[in-house]
Amino acid sequence: MTSKSDFNAEEWSTLAEAPLFAAMQVTRAERGGTLRESIAVAKAYAEARQHQGQSELLDAIVASPPALDPSAVRSEGGDVASVARSRLTQAAAVLEAKVPAEERDAYEQFVLTLAEAAANANREGGFIGIGGKPVSENEQAALADIREALRARS
Image (cartoon, rainbow, N blue to C red):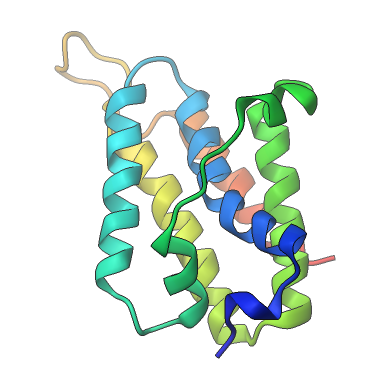
């Protein structure tokens, strides 16, 4: 199994931050619901902690979710989607180089679980909570972008 000690500080930072940036990308895809989406992501982290022991890598990542510095997004142009894509692509490359396929798949599933939790947290459209879609087209596009970035193992 792969542990935190198998990565340098920069690689670890990328692996730890990428899931949260993915969730932020989905949250930013639509207006409204930010609080619900943030709570859903926090619950997904908490639930992942309940499944400890299945992957030492994921155990270490969910043990202490990163605090993201807003200036990091501003310094990279302020576009959360491009920052998320960059971090996810970097994470995929690190995983490809250092982690067995089973653990890569578990990491990718964790990232998608967080992003989908954010997407499903708030109905989009409709009127005062009636009608609307569980996941908007913009959120679906963000999820597709996240999946593509995770597969970009260059």
